[in-house]
Length: 590
Image (tube, rainbow, N blue to C red; front, top):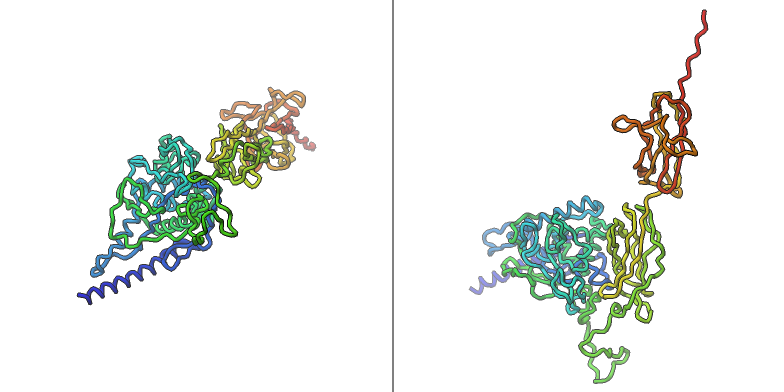
């Protein structure tokens, strides 16, 4: 009996060794530039490190809880005599994604392929994030429209184990009017959802609890800043912007590669559920996964100083750094070379820079005007100040484009968050005008503090041209009742550059001094063949060129004028001549 037990023990040890080697091989294959430690845990070799100074509410999730479970090892179908190995079954189950959830990911990829083709968003990335954030909406517990049967809420972000994000939505999304919580299958915090939310299922609503809405919002969030997710560096930046943790990055990359190798659809509500939240607590899910013998591998998260769920994370400023404990000192004394302890009363939190902000000041922004399609030359800048007028650094300022406009920041979004520099100044990204003309507002507000915002008025003017010129110098002539052989083509410029998309009008006028429409001579024809002598609604092309329709002549001879004008005041007058054809000379008689 003991000999048989010894054989089993040796077989188990050998299996464990093989599994450890396989884990390392799998992790090493997950993404370029990612290595593994001796336990097979993933480590980013050249990934973009998380920005410890970045605010938690500048991420999609607020650096909230996520799941650290890794994919199981892919193994062949179990063979008799192996002690009931179920790793192959486990892998098959983990690859399955609930039908509605999978459909939402693929629809989001398709939509982004149309709206932001340069992003190259793979739906497998959304699946990886959805797995890590909520276990694919708690295993696909969604209705036919994609809405979760109950809200999926992250932990309260009250500055304890996670970031301190005070309420931004009055509890509208998360039911908490004191602090924010991440919401929905893709775990957006309310302040991020407010601008990143999308309507993915066409019901006219932007619901973070709907997988179609949340997946499309996550895709747009990952594609901002003109990131190209086929580029490894941009991919890492995008993932870290979702949750600012290297361990989170590695976990998502692992699932991304796992899903890229293949997946399949499973019925809603039957997906596997993760069991290891990053904070080490319970999952908080209303659907508790039951233990399964297939979970033979329980990853231990590596110590990650940048993981906001671990003590000492600079992003949250909470917890112990985990370093060596200094020797004890007698009461009332301070160790040599150390800073005296804070005089902050026990049970209170020292004020953050944000807490000291009293108001916002314009930091030199002038008149904001730009032509449609152009970038604004003036930068929008604001300064955060205390009540005494002192500048406050390291404060997050949110710039929001407000009004009936299609103007955006250069990221393509209407919201941007910037941290103030040492002079207390935050400068918004370059503002770019859309095609819609008129006025709008850029509003600056302090993130996490209720102080009055500062509004900047901006104006978008129509595209203009200040010069017009013909592209050829051929004389434009015609016989009575005929048609001109050459169509009039002009090129519009503005300050020497191509003036594209500029509105223009072409009119056959009576004379140089009388710009009213002529009632005789050359003319255009409409679709019905009727005479037209004024063309409106013309627009120059991308190269600034404008080619007019064919011109015709009536029986009137003489010299006539065609005048072309554009928005911006560019004018060109073209001369047209209608004359009878010269008769041939008679041949000499015999």
